[in-house]
Length: 470
Image (tube, rainbow, N blue to C red; front, side, top):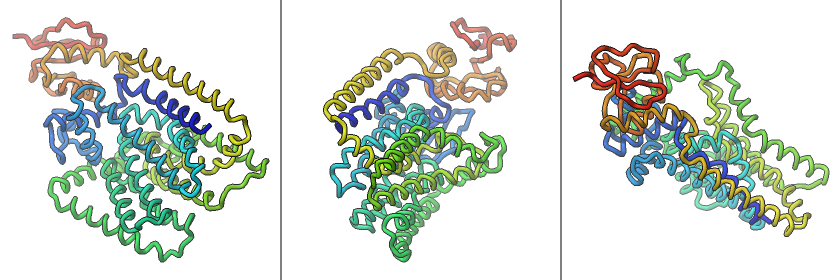
């Protein structure tokens, strides 16, 4: 039965990602990361001096650079096709899935029969809309999640399986550091993991925390010294601090909500399905008087507190977006799954397994077939910005790659316009004096073209491309 449920979960995982991930059009943040990584792979900018466009963030410092470094390797491997960052995002989703499975097997290393239930936390992890949306839009949370989950894998290896605590503490800390290198302080919440694990699971004396936290502090201090001592990284993080962090707290324009508790609401909405399922099975367990091991209840509490540690600090600022929650989803999923595991196991053993497995296999085949059909039939249909992409592709094919185009100053804040031009054709948009460049871009029916320019006859929908008269 579990084999059938594993197949169904993988089919759902693929259905939620594949039909959307390979379609053109992308959320602005993911487009930025892909563009900067592509530029780096093609020699525009360097590891510690990233480049977006010639006139929009010529020096890019908005995020720590690790995700962009890794993505740039994919561009070197697969080229500048639009599918490169999508292949990378799919890779991160698969790695996260495998790590969740590994952690599940760690938890139930004494009960091999429960290890086959890894499909349950994977299902609870992927079904929140923000989760699969993040993987189809190339968000930095995708990469950061890998290192965050890996840090907890090393924690469990050392403190639950009792395998060389010193080595696993070092590996855990390095994973947290790499998570920080993806998106800053947001990736460091697993640092409380050993504390929570001791309080919830092992119930050891607080003195047992001294050694691991000394080791963690030592690794963190060494990492900071290395970054500080190397001049390019020092300058990068100084710019990151003033460009991103200070701006987040001091610039009202960075706010995305007036309510600091917006993410609490978003969390409840994202986790609504797992919570309802968990509530249903907990009610059944109460009626049937089914008990679970105290040890596993404590582990579930550990994962829940760990997830909250990654959620609550996000309420400090009013710049809140639902995908910021994605790195915490694996731990909510593990907490809910452990809580209801025994009830689900009870039902699976009670029902006619062969008949139910057949039904699940049929549903799995239907889901997988639907995924293939949906992916195939929508492959060339942009999932967003269809008209914008249409116009940019016609322009990009009509002028030399790497050109600069003057734009009306009113278009400067059309960020996606800059990004698609740079991502697809290495074209930068110049908001300065129109006569400075050979080409000039304006919106249709909104601007009078300067007399020194003539319109190029292209089948554009929203824009007009002009060329300077000879």
